Image (cartoon, rainbow, N blue to C red; front, side, top):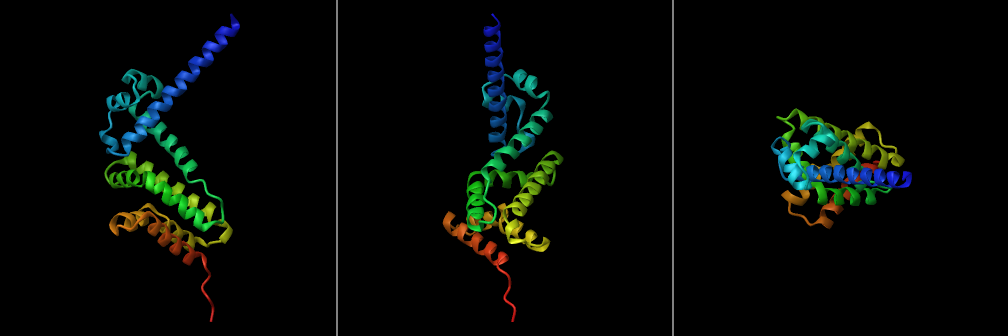
Amino acid sequence: MKMTRTYTMSARAKAVEQTRQRILEATLELSATRRIAAISLDDVARAAGVSVQTVLRQYGSRAGLIDATTAYADGVITDERRTPAGDARAAVAVVVEHYERRGDAVLLLLAQEIDDPVVRRMTARGKRLHRAWVEEVFAPFGPDGATVDLLVVATDVYTWKLLRHDRGLSRPQTEARMVTLVQALLTPASKD
């Protein structure tokens, strides 16, 4: 009897965790194509295949869901952008791959930050994560604060957008130009 109860509780806990995961993934997917303010609990429930009551039971409120999704997205993005420190080419390849997958969604979020305080907190968090990533990945090169600022710009989603979307460059061309920018920042100026 005890064995069945333990198994039942484990199975139930696993089902609850899978439901929570589906809800977070659905919310993240919806945020890639819609303004955050336009995503309703009904939309999330429908996309996750659950009821609104289930969403509320898991996250308490729409605000709780948005906070949980932001934390979930941070983890997903951190995993996607994992890069060995000191390898500039690999860093650019990883960040370009990330932008190919999520860049348009990030641009949509950034377009909302001016008039939505919830999104402004999300994008501020994302900007801090990007800077921390730059500091970690390029730390072996010993960049000073000004160089870190420039590396943030060289690897930013707007740099990718300017090259990929606005200039219409291919992914390899975009990556090559971003590598050129990064390497120029990491190469000490020659002294005459």
